[in-house]
Image (tube, rainbow, N blue to C red; front, side, top):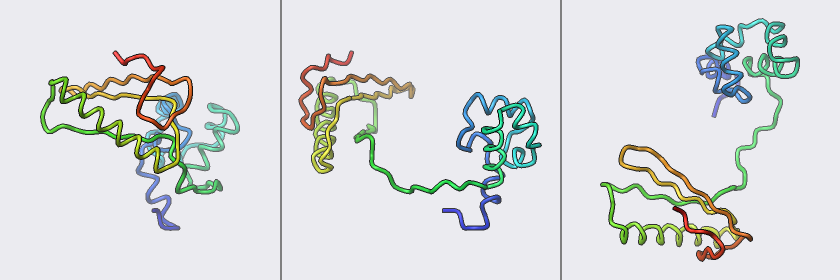
Length: 157
């Protein structure tokens, strides 16, 4: 929560990439202009911003850096995903232990779907290896379901 009147104090030290609408490409262009922080962006020339980014985007960046944003703040929204995960205290390689854990997590997600009166169509499995490399695999059902059985989904390899 940012108290009214303290917006610039909070925003200006932040990296410019923290602003909505500043992705990798815009961030790279701003970097070439010497703009690294929101304060740098606030000090930038509006005409330069609009010439580089176009009228709408340049003007929008100029305004955001000055905490000028009339959009309504939405603090809560409906969940678009339901998940469960577990981090083990030590590496687990026993397939039976991993299968049991996966079944426990599936049951947990299914219970959340049931309590939310929701259905799911896409199943995603995320695995983080001992070296913190993360691998994800997704599969979609032909229809949304709220049951743990995933008939119609090919096994995740």
